[in-house]
Length: 337
Image (cartoon, rainbow, N blue to C red):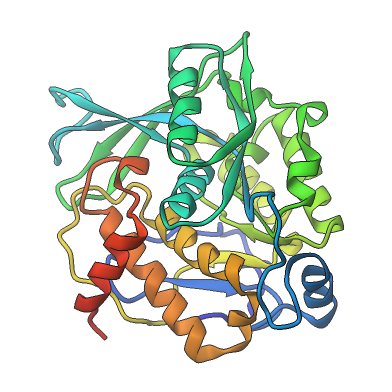
Protein backbone atom coordinates (compact mmCIF):
# COMPACT_ATOMS: atom_id res chain seq x y z
CA UNK A 1 0.00 0.00 0.00
CA UNK A 2 1.48 3.32 -1.00
CA UNK A 3 -0.27 5.40 1.66
CA UNK A 4 0.36 4.13 5.16
CA UNK A 5 0.25 5.20 8.78
CA UNK A 6 3.59 6.11 10.31
CA UNK A 7 5.13 8.02 13.20
CA UNK A 8 7.70 10.75 12.62
CA UNK A 9 11.06 9.14 11.79
CA UNK A 10 13.39 8.60 14.75
CA UNK A 11 11.00 10.36 17.10
CA UNK A 12 12.86 9.07 20.11
CA UNK A 13 16.35 9.32 18.59
CA UNK A 14 18.59 11.95 17.15
CA UNK A 15 18.36 11.25 13.45
CA UNK A 16 16.79 13.61 10.93
CA UNK A 17 13.81 13.14 8.67
CA UNK A 18 15.66 12.31 5.49
CA UNK A 19 15.11 13.13 1.84
CA UNK A 20 16.46 9.98 0.20
CA UNK A 21 17.79 9.98 -3.33
CA UNK A 22 14.82 10.27 -5.70
CA UNK A 23 14.30 7.17 -7.80
CA UNK A 24 13.52 7.50 -11.46
CA UNK A 25 11.18 4.54 -11.71
CA UNK A 26 8.99 2.52 -9.45
CA UNK A 27 9.48 3.57 -5.85
CA UNK A 28 7.87 6.88 -5.01
CA UNK A 29 5.15 7.02 -2.42
CA UNK A 30 3.11 9.57 -0.54
CA UNK A 31 2.28 9.07 3.11
CA UNK A 32 -0.90 9.90 4.99
CA UNK A 33 -0.06 10.64 8.62
CA UNK A 34 -3.12 9.15 10.22
CA UNK A 35 -4.23 6.31 7.97
CA UNK A 36 -4.64 5.27 4.36
CA UNK A 37 -7.44 7.82 4.21
CA UNK A 38 -7.97 10.96 6.31
CA UNK A 39 -9.25 10.33 9.82
CA UNK A 40 -13.03 10.68 10.24
CA UNK A 41 -12.94 14.17 11.72
CA UNK A 42 -10.43 15.38 9.14
CA UNK A 43 -12.34 13.85 6.27
CA UNK A 44 -15.50 15.57 7.44
CA UNK A 45 -13.77 18.92 7.68
CA UNK A 46 -12.22 18.63 4.25
CA UNK A 47 -15.30 17.32 2.51
CA UNK A 48 -17.57 19.98 3.94
CA UNK A 49 -15.39 22.54 2.25
CA UNK A 50 -13.84 20.82 -0.72
CA UNK A 51 -15.87 17.99 -2.23
CA UNK A 52 -19.40 16.95 -3.00
CA UNK A 53 -21.04 13.74 -1.85
CA UNK A 54 -19.79 11.91 -4.96
CA UNK A 55 -16.18 12.70 -4.10
CA UNK A 56 -15.73 15.45 -6.69
CA UNK A 57 -14.46 18.88 -5.58
CA UNK A 58 -17.04 21.61 -5.33
CA UNK A 59 -16.93 24.25 -8.02
CA UNK A 60 -14.96 27.36 -7.17
CA UNK A 61 -13.03 30.07 -8.98
CA UNK A 62 -10.34 29.86 -6.28
CA UNK A 63 -7.17 27.85 -6.92
CA UNK A 64 -7.54 24.25 -5.77
CA UNK A 65 -3.95 23.97 -4.49
CA UNK A 66 -2.10 26.80 -2.75
CA UNK A 67 1.67 26.37 -2.41
CA UNK A 68 3.60 28.35 0.20
CA UNK A 69 7.33 28.95 0.48
CA UNK A 70 10.42 29.82 -1.54
CA UNK A 71 10.71 30.90 -5.17
CA UNK A 72 14.25 31.37 -6.45
CA UNK A 73 16.69 31.07 -9.32
CA UNK A 74 18.66 27.84 -9.76
CA UNK A 75 21.92 28.04 -11.69
CA UNK A 76 22.53 24.59 -13.10
CA UNK A 77 25.82 23.63 -14.84
CA UNK A 78 25.46 22.89 -18.53
CA UNK A 79 27.63 19.80 -18.04
CA UNK A 80 27.50 17.14 -15.32
CA UNK A 81 30.29 15.77 -13.19
CA UNK A 82 32.17 19.02 -12.52
CA UNK A 83 32.47 21.24 -9.45
CA UNK A 84 30.96 24.70 -9.35
CA UNK A 85 34.43 26.18 -9.74
CA UNK A 86 35.13 24.08 -12.84
CA UNK A 87 31.74 24.60 -14.53
CA UNK A 88 32.23 26.69 -17.65
CA UNK A 89 28.58 27.79 -17.97
CA UNK A 90 25.27 27.61 -16.12
CA UNK A 91 21.65 27.42 -17.17
CA UNK A 92 19.41 29.89 -15.33
CA UNK A 93 16.23 28.12 -14.21
CA UNK A 94 13.35 29.18 -11.92
CA UNK A 95 12.97 26.91 -8.91
CA UNK A 96 12.11 26.54 -5.23
CA UNK A 97 10.30 23.38 -4.12
CA UNK A 98 6.81 24.84 -3.39
CA UNK A 99 6.91 26.91 -6.59
CA UNK A 100 7.94 23.82 -8.54
CA UNK A 101 4.84 22.05 -7.26
CA UNK A 102 2.57 24.98 -8.16
CA UNK A 103 3.88 25.09 -11.72
CA UNK A 104 3.81 21.30 -11.98
CA UNK A 105 0.11 21.21 -11.07
CA UNK A 106 -0.73 23.94 -13.58
CA UNK A 107 1.22 22.16 -16.33
CA UNK A 108 -0.91 19.09 -15.64
CA UNK A 109 -4.09 21.11 -16.15
CA UNK A 110 -4.76 21.76 -12.47
CA UNK A 111 -5.50 24.98 -10.62
CA UNK A 112 -2.75 26.34 -8.35
CA UNK A 113 -1.53 29.46 -6.59
CA UNK A 114 1.75 30.47 -5.00
CA UNK A 115 2.35 32.51 -1.84
CA UNK A 116 5.80 33.86 -1.10
CA UNK A 117 8.19 36.77 -1.57
CA UNK A 118 10.89 37.67 -4.08
CA UNK A 119 13.17 40.66 -4.43
CA UNK A 120 12.16 43.87 -6.14
CA UNK A 121 14.72 43.05 -8.81
CA UNK A 122 15.01 41.63 -12.31
CA UNK A 123 15.01 38.03 -11.08
CA UNK A 124 11.91 38.69 -8.98
CA UNK A 125 10.06 40.16 -11.97
CA UNK A 126 11.15 37.23 -14.11
CA UNK A 127 9.80 34.74 -11.56
CA UNK A 128 6.51 36.59 -11.24
CA UNK A 129 6.09 36.55 -15.00
CA UNK A 130 7.02 32.87 -15.08
CA UNK A 131 4.16 32.04 -12.71
CA UNK A 132 1.68 33.95 -14.86
CA UNK A 133 2.97 32.35 -18.05
CA UNK A 134 2.38 28.93 -16.48
CA UNK A 135 -1.16 29.83 -15.35
CA UNK A 136 -0.26 29.90 -11.66
CA UNK A 137 -2.21 32.43 -9.58
CA UNK A 138 0.44 34.84 -8.23
CA UNK A 139 -1.73 37.25 -6.26
CA UNK A 140 0.02 36.05 -3.09
CA UNK A 141 3.50 36.85 -4.43
CA UNK A 142 5.11 39.93 -2.87
CA UNK A 143 8.20 41.98 -3.73
CA UNK A 144 10.71 43.09 -1.09
CA UNK A 145 12.72 46.27 -1.64
CA UNK A 146 15.29 45.42 1.06
CA UNK A 147 16.49 42.00 -0.04
CA UNK A 148 17.32 40.23 -3.27
CA UNK A 149 15.68 37.18 -4.81
CA UNK A 150 17.31 33.97 -3.54
CA UNK A 151 19.86 32.19 -5.74
CA UNK A 152 21.05 28.58 -5.64
CA UNK A 153 23.98 27.13 -7.54
CA UNK A 154 23.53 23.43 -8.19
CA UNK A 155 26.37 20.97 -8.72
CA UNK A 156 25.39 18.05 -10.95
CA UNK A 157 27.32 14.85 -10.35
CA UNK A 158 27.89 12.49 -13.26
CA UNK A 159 24.84 10.43 -12.13
CA UNK A 160 22.55 13.47 -12.22
CA UNK A 161 22.40 13.91 -8.44
CA UNK A 162 22.95 17.36 -6.91
CA UNK A 163 24.66 19.45 -4.28
CA UNK A 164 23.54 23.01 -3.49
CA UNK A 165 25.19 26.34 -2.68
CA UNK A 166 22.66 28.98 -1.58
CA UNK A 167 22.86 32.78 -1.62
CA UNK A 168 20.31 34.10 0.89
CA UNK A 169 21.74 36.36 3.64
CA UNK A 170 18.91 37.19 3.86
CA UNK A 171 16.96 36.70 0.67
CA UNK A 172 13.50 38.14 0.10
CA UNK A 173 11.66 34.86 0.79
CA UNK A 174 13.02 34.87 4.35
CA UNK A 175 11.37 38.24 5.06
CA UNK A 176 7.72 37.37 4.42
CA UNK A 177 5.63 38.56 7.39
CA UNK A 178 2.39 37.22 8.81
CA UNK A 179 0.57 40.51 8.17
CA UNK A 180 1.37 40.19 4.44
CA UNK A 181 -0.37 36.82 3.99
CA UNK A 182 -3.40 36.45 1.75
CA UNK A 183 -5.33 34.26 4.17
CA UNK A 184 -8.50 34.23 2.07
CA UNK A 185 -6.56 32.57 -0.75
CA UNK A 186 -5.46 29.85 1.68
CA UNK A 187 -8.87 29.33 3.28
CA UNK A 188 -10.61 28.90 -0.08
CA UNK A 189 -8.17 26.23 -1.29
CA UNK A 190 -8.78 22.51 -1.24
CA UNK A 191 -5.12 21.65 -0.58
CA UNK A 192 -2.39 23.69 1.11
CA UNK A 193 1.14 22.52 0.24
CA UNK A 194 4.24 23.73 2.06
CA UNK A 195 7.84 22.74 2.79
CA UNK A 196 10.30 23.28 5.62
CA UNK A 197 12.76 25.89 4.29
CA UNK A 198 10.56 28.79 5.41
CA UNK A 199 10.68 27.45 8.99
CA UNK A 200 14.37 28.28 9.36
CA UNK A 201 14.33 32.00 10.20
CA UNK A 202 12.03 34.78 11.31
CA UNK A 203 9.86 36.51 10.25
CA UNK A 204 9.00 33.90 7.64
CA UNK A 205 8.77 31.14 10.24
CA UNK A 206 5.90 32.89 12.02
CA UNK A 207 4.20 33.61 8.68
CA UNK A 208 4.57 29.97 7.70
CA UNK A 209 2.99 28.70 10.91
CA UNK A 210 0.14 31.24 10.61
CA UNK A 211 -0.55 30.18 7.01
CA UNK A 212 -0.62 26.51 7.99
CA UNK A 213 -2.95 27.23 10.91
CA UNK A 214 -5.32 29.19 8.68
CA UNK A 215 -5.49 26.21 6.32
CA UNK A 216 -6.05 23.73 9.13
CA UNK A 217 -8.75 25.84 10.75
CA UNK A 218 -10.55 26.12 7.40
CA UNK A 219 -10.55 22.35 6.88
CA UNK A 220 -8.06 22.49 4.00
CA UNK A 221 -6.06 19.30 3.34
CA UNK A 222 -2.43 19.96 4.28
CA UNK A 223 0.44 18.52 2.26
CA UNK A 224 3.98 18.76 3.70
CA UNK A 225 7.37 18.22 2.06
CA UNK A 226 10.15 18.02 4.72
CA UNK A 227 12.68 18.92 1.98
CA UNK A 228 15.83 18.79 4.10
CA UNK A 229 18.55 21.26 3.06
CA UNK A 230 20.95 20.85 5.96
CA UNK A 231 23.42 23.66 5.00
CA UNK A 232 20.63 26.21 5.50
CA UNK A 233 20.07 25.22 9.14
CA UNK A 234 22.34 26.23 12.02
CA UNK A 235 22.74 22.59 13.07
CA UNK A 236 21.40 19.12 12.43
CA UNK A 237 19.50 19.25 15.72
CA UNK A 238 17.81 22.52 14.74
CA UNK A 239 16.86 21.03 11.40
CA UNK A 240 15.35 17.98 13.06
CA UNK A 241 13.40 20.07 15.59
CA UNK A 242 12.21 22.55 12.97
CA UNK A 243 11.08 19.95 10.47
CA UNK A 244 9.25 17.92 13.11
CA UNK A 245 7.65 21.03 14.69
CA UNK A 246 4.75 20.97 12.20
CA UNK A 247 4.82 17.28 11.34
CA UNK A 248 1.62 16.44 13.20
CA UNK A 249 -0.37 19.21 11.52
CA UNK A 250 -0.01 17.63 8.05
CA UNK A 251 -2.45 15.24 6.40
CA UNK A 252 0.00 14.13 3.71
CA UNK A 253 3.79 13.93 3.88
CA UNK A 254 6.16 13.14 1.03
CA UNK A 255 8.04 9.91 1.70
CA UNK A 256 9.82 7.26 -0.33
CA UNK A 257 8.62 3.68 0.16
CA UNK A 258 6.48 1.02 -1.48
CA UNK A 259 6.37 0.25 -5.19
CA UNK A 260 4.23 1.28 -8.15
CA UNK A 261 4.81 1.34 -11.89
CA UNK A 262 7.59 3.55 -13.20
CA UNK A 263 9.37 4.67 -16.34
CA UNK A 264 12.97 3.87 -17.26
CA UNK A 265 14.78 7.06 -18.26
CA UNK A 266 18.31 8.44 -18.35
CA UNK A 267 18.75 10.97 -15.55
CA UNK A 268 20.25 14.29 -16.63
CA UNK A 269 19.30 16.40 -13.61
CA UNK A 270 17.22 15.17 -10.66
CA UNK A 271 16.35 18.70 -9.49
CA UNK A 272 12.58 18.94 -9.07
CA UNK A 273 11.84 15.22 -9.50
CA UNK A 274 10.22 14.92 -6.08
CA UNK A 275 8.29 18.14 -6.64
CA UNK A 276 6.96 16.84 -9.95
CA UNK A 277 5.84 13.68 -8.16
CA UNK A 278 4.04 15.76 -5.53
CA UNK A 279 2.43 17.89 -8.25
CA UNK A 280 1.21 14.73 -9.93
CA UNK A 281 -0.45 13.22 -6.88
CA UNK A 282 -1.90 16.53 -5.65
CA UNK A 283 -3.37 17.23 -9.08
CA UNK A 284 -5.25 13.95 -8.80
CA UNK A 285 -6.35 14.47 -5.18
CA UNK A 286 -7.62 17.98 -5.93
CA UNK A 287 -10.08 16.42 -8.36
CA UNK A 288 -11.20 13.60 -6.09
CA UNK A 289 -10.17 13.09 -2.45
CA UNK A 290 -11.89 9.70 -2.39
CA UNK A 291 -8.85 8.29 -4.22
CA UNK A 292 -7.33 7.97 -0.74
CA UNK A 293 -9.93 5.33 0.11
CA UNK A 294 -9.53 3.19 -3.01
CA UNK A 295 -6.20 1.35 -3.29
CA UNK A 296 -6.56 0.53 -6.99
CA UNK A 297 -7.23 4.16 -7.97
CA UNK A 298 -4.58 5.35 -5.55
CA UNK A 299 -1.99 3.13 -7.21
CA UNK A 300 -2.94 4.55 -10.59
CA UNK A 301 -2.58 8.08 -9.22
CA UNK A 302 0.83 7.22 -7.77
CA UNK A 303 1.91 5.71 -11.08
CA UNK A 304 0.87 8.95 -12.79
CA UNK A 305 2.91 10.92 -10.24
CA UNK A 306 5.88 8.60 -10.74
CA UNK A 307 5.85 9.34 -14.46
CA UNK A 308 5.83 13.07 -13.70
CA UNK A 309 8.98 12.66 -11.61
CA UNK A 310 10.70 10.45 -14.17
CA UNK A 311 10.10 12.85 -17.05
CA UNK A 312 11.45 15.76 -15.01
CA UNK A 313 14.92 14.24 -14.60
CA UNK A 314 15.43 14.09 -18.36
CA UNK A 315 16.03 17.86 -18.63
CA UNK A 316 18.11 20.42 -16.74
CA UNK A 317 16.39 22.65 -14.20
CA UNK A 318 13.24 22.05 -12.16
CA UNK A 319 10.45 24.22 -13.54
CA UNK A 320 11.64 24.07 -17.17
CA UNK A 321 11.46 20.27 -16.96
CA UNK A 322 7.99 19.95 -15.42
CA UNK A 323 5.90 17.80 -17.80
CA UNK A 324 2.57 18.61 -19.39
CA UNK A 325 -0.47 16.37 -19.10
CA UNK A 326 0.00 15.22 -22.70
CA UNK A 327 3.63 14.28 -22.08
CA UNK A 328 2.62 12.17 -19.10
CA UNK A 329 -0.19 10.52 -21.05
CA UNK A 330 2.22 9.63 -23.85
CA UNK A 331 4.77 8.21 -21.38
CA UNK A 332 2.19 6.05 -19.58
CA UNK A 333 2.23 3.74 -22.59
CA UNK A 334 5.81 2.80 -21.71
CA UNK A 335 5.35 2.19 -17.96
CA UNK A 336 7.18 -0.79 -16.45
CA UNK A 337 5.56 -2.73 -13.61
